[in-house]
Every structure is written in C-alpha cells, then in structure tokens.
Amino acid sequence: MEKFESGGAVTLKFGTDGVRGVAYVELTTDLVRALGTAAAQVLGGPAFLIGRDTRASGPDLQAALADGLAAAGADVIDLGVLPTPAVAHNSAVERLPAAMISASHNPYQDNGVKFFLAGGRKLSDEVEAELEAAMARTAATPTRSGGRLSTAPGPTAGYERHVLDSIEGRTLHGLTVVIDCANGAAFDVAPRVLRTLGADVHVLHDQPDGQNINAGCGSTHPGDLQAAVVERGADAGLAFDGDADRVLAVDHTGALVDGDQLMAVLALDLRDQGRLHDDTLVVTVMSNLGLRLAMADAGVRVHETQVGDRSVLEALEANGWSLGGEQSGHVILRDLATTGDGLLTGVQVLDAVRRRGRPLADLAAVMARLPQVLRNVRVARRDGLDDAQAVWDAVAAVERRLGRSGRVLLRPSGTEPVVRVMVEAGDEATAQAAADELAAVVGEWGEFEARA
Image 1 (cartoon, helix red, strand yellow):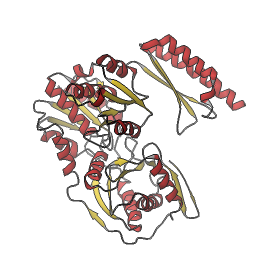
Image 2 (cartoon, rainbow, N blue to C red; image 1 turned 90 degrees about the vertical axis):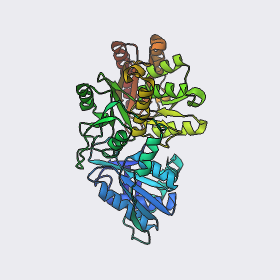
Image 3 (cartoon, one colour; image 1 turned 135 degrees about the vertical axis):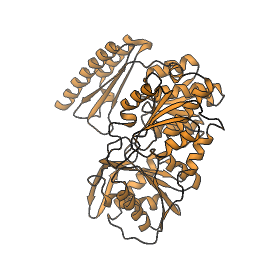
Image 4 (cartoon, rainbow, N blue to C red; image 1 turned 180 degrees about the vertical axis):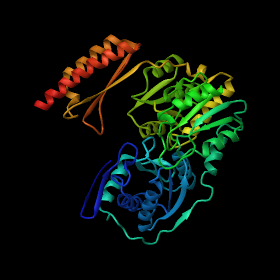
C-alpha cells in the first residue's frame, strides 16, 4: 500500500487484494475512516456489511471503517469474525456492498481492507481508481452523520448452509480429517461444518488470541498439520490461511497437496460429472507446468491469466467457465462462489475422495509437480525489460534446451525494484542451473541500465 497525507486529505493505492499495511502505522484508523467515507460514496447501497478476522487490530479498524461509512450516511451491519468467503456470500445473498478487515496470510501486525460490490464480487481496477480519487477528496476525520450501526444475527448461518448443501445431501461419514485453522477466521466455522457433514474432525490452531494468527501454522506453515495427519492416521488434512479464502491439503502420507494439485483433482472430478464448462481450467502464470501437462494429457484445456485470484475470476465470468485458481490455494468454484473459499474447496475435495473411494494421494497423483525455482534479481528500474534483447535471447536459449519438460517465466515485480525469474524443469539441478544462468543475465542488464 502506498499512501500520503496532505492538507487533511488521504491518498492511497490499492494492491492486488485491497489495501494492506502495518496496523496503526501504515493502515491508521484515520486512513480507514476516510476509506469508509469514500467507499460509501463510490460503492453506494443502503447498508454496508463488515466482517473481520482475529487480529488484535481488527476491532479498532472495523470501528473506524464503520465510522467513515456512517459519516457518509450508510447504515453498517457488523458481521463479526468470519471468513472472507462468508462475507462475500452474505454480500451476494443480501445484495449489499461489503468489506473484510484482514491481511490474509500476513502476520498479525499487518491488517487490510478488502471490498466487495453488492453481489459479492471484488472491485475492478476502475472502481478502485474511483475509490482512490474519492480518498484524495476526503478529510481524514469525518464527522458522524446519520448512518446506523447494527449487529447481524447468525452471520455465518447462511454461509454454513451453503457449504453443506454444496455436496447435495451427501456426507463425509467415514473420513478422518485434521484441520489447521491458523488461529484465524475459520476457527469456529470450519470444524462445525465438517462435523455436521459427519467427518471425524481433529482441530489444530483454533485458539486465536489476536497475535497468533498465521504464526507458525495454517497454509503458510503446514508442518504441524502434516505431522498430525500421520500421527492420527487421518485420511486427509486441510490448512486454511488467516481469513480462510485459501486452503492447502495433506494426504494420508503427510505429503502436501498444493493449490495446483487440488485444481487437478477438482477439474477431473467436475469433468467426469459433466460440470467443467468447456472442459477448461483457469490458472495463473505461476501454476506449475506439471498441472498444464496433466490437464493436456486428460483433455482439459488450460487458460492462463496474470497473478491474482481477481484475474482468475474475471476470466471465469467472461467465458462462463467453472473452475480456476492459484498454486497458493485460492480456488474459485464459480458455480458455487464469487471468490476463493478454503472451506468450500476442502469440502469439495473430501467429497470427491469419499465418492470415488480412493485416497487423496491417488487422486492428486494425476499431476506430478515439476521442480520450480524462483530467483528475485534486484534492479535499478523495472521498466525496459521488454526491450532487453540479450535477456530474451537467453530465455529463448534456455527454453529450447528445456523443451516440453520445462518452462521459463520472467516478470517484473509490481511493488519492488525486482525482476522475478522462475524456471521449471524435469529435475531440481536443471532448474537451479537455468535459474542461476538467467538471473545472471538479468543482473548484467540491470547493472547496464543503472549506468546508462
């Protein structure tokens, strides 16, 4: 997040998933209050829904956002602590704009604000630009005027019923599942839903204290879950992030099943049911080549987008496709949800395991993850890479050597003076060597540009 204050006005820039920064330092209550007033002006609606995750700063920032919304005359409905996809679901059902106070998988010191249009869709670049412009005109400390504050009764009930109904009356009886709630927003909802579906559920990291969200747990730190699945002889494990819009899984052997593998399992399951529209899966440029090869072998087309679940959703909606997501575990089942949903994804995968009578390890084995090596090369400036002929000649040479069994991706960071070099190959040593080779060429180009 970029922001500055001038003459009582606040200006900020949206990132790939809303506004995010260190709570009380970058993301101050004044800034969030002003953001609320701007949101009321731009997003409209007779009322506004607000949820949050379990961070210590959540109540203060939620109150500030509510103050700003009320200052512009909007009524505010407090949803309390619940997952981001539950906020999106409430937005879709109630046809009201909404916000989630969360920094997703970041540590507790960070926080953020994600917005949804009435109907549960994330904001487009154009709407974010309108919000940025409105922020530039908004005083940092508006005076309350007119909007009413209320608390929603049973804010997760409809969402829970939606997830339960998604497997059409079937159950998860007979499955033993360990879940890691990351001391985050799913700590209460996820165990309840899975137990209602009949699974034997063991829960890790479900005691949030405001500071332990994502701390050595959840989808970014799945080690505890992997050990617990093996120790308990469980069929599978699910690891959510702090706001539960993403999930990674663990099979009965303790092996991690990432977002690419989950998409492979779901794509083939939906295809076999006749529910994978146009037999197409949407992935980002960061998805593993192994997923692309597996889908090609299975007759499933792959459509590629830029990084970000919003880019995935735009492609899904523009073409009427059913499934897409990211390697990180953001998976969007468009016929069931308007955003990535860790719990919904986990339930769908477990349902596939039970219906097919095969272990998750067998289903996930449809794709083999190719070694993927990433190098971040610091440069003086990111622009100009498109015209760096020596760099692209080197890329072409590496791609010729790798053939169908490898892939190269070069892209400038959107936030840092860094060029990201990613290489996939059939073995780790080949990927490492190619990544080092290309990183050196990018580094030489960066030094030349700095001197020019």
